[in-house]
Image 1: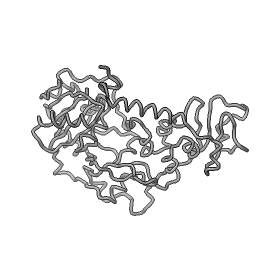
Image 2 (image 1 turned 45 degrees about the vertical axis):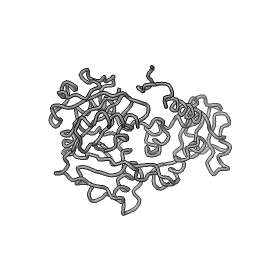
Image 3 (image 1 turned 90 degrees about the vertical axis):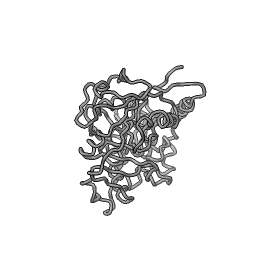
Image 4 (image 1 turned 135 degrees about the horizontal axis):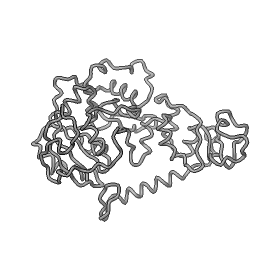
Length: 365
């Protein structure tokens, strides 16, 4: 057997489907419409390396062009993002520029001679020019929108962890963990990571969770480095990508194993919290109106309506519970409540309550 991206490959594996998707993605990256069709479809023209600009070059495009060079060797296209996105078939971005839901400017940007328009999306996202709520719809696999402040080195599964659920001293697994809130002992196990999330969920529910004796579970999926970092400092890492988390900064958990696994990187981990005691804390169950206000803000969309300003319960909430976001079924409806629930610890007491309830760590191998 061979391993690809941490996934075990066997005959007939859905990895074949993944390869086909990636190949199709590459073909889409290379496909772009004819720039001469822009004006007829209601878009501004763009400057191209081969044909230049059809007429006097506007100032915002001329700022990127060296007038002394008839043929610019470093740039392939220069134009407004709406025109470039239309050329690349990125219709959701075209709609987002025109929609009052997003604070997205139709800036003029250059496309290097060795790049496709689609290949520039990570750069445009990192520079804050496009919203993550739309960007993640074009990524395969979905991007990791969190940054872990920890040395970049491989993190191995601790030696004492086996394929059988066993109790361990926390320091035997994480020598430099801080145990103020975590239990002194914890169960841990490693399981085989499959290409099908449903199969991994079945294995966990059948072979792993019964060892905890039942209860109410919350799951948190993350990379191995993220796990080791969390055991040393159980706080969310504050960074600009939190504008793409539905409820803002916090430690995100969910009662859905399947959802948590989507956030666990290949060869990642699951933290399993059992019977977390939030009774002394304020748990804010979001209604539809508050859910809309909070997610609109933290995904970078506008709060243009007076009734969608800061909800009254925002300041006092220790825990926020509500549905995940999901792409809307209609063209102008970008985010709607999803089917899964997320429970987010947003205060230090809530994070301590979560840490105290940590019952199991599942390593994906």
